[in-house]
Image (cartoon, rainbow, N blue to C red; front, side):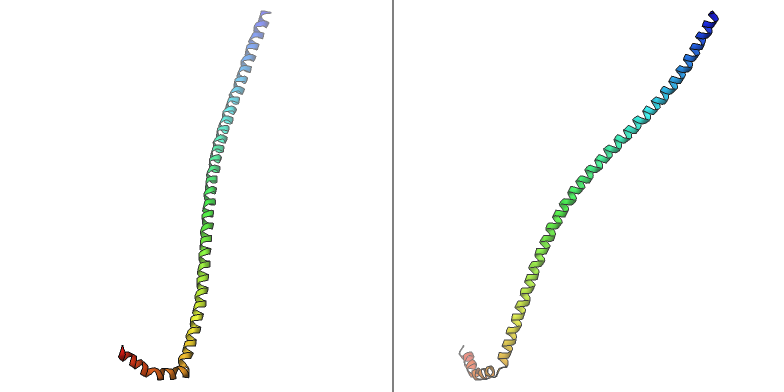
Length: 134
């Protein structure tokens, strides 16, 4: 019976060793899996930190773009107001030129009139006398 007990004990030790190796193998596989998961977790964390930084940069860029847009709109309004002033000045210039042309035409008609020519002829002696006196 001792042989049975020894055989049974050896079988038990062999089974236990086999089971121990199996558990160690499973433990090693589990540890590798844990390491892979930790690495994946770290990569995910790094990615999320990078994404958060990019979001921050985009927000800053967005704010800068909005400020530039506001400045551009102010600049455009200023240019439009300046253009309006120039157009008004040009309209006034055209009106003034038309008035000047009308006055010049009227003066030309006066100079061409018979009464002007007669008056000028009559006034020649008076002009000569004025020059002599002065």
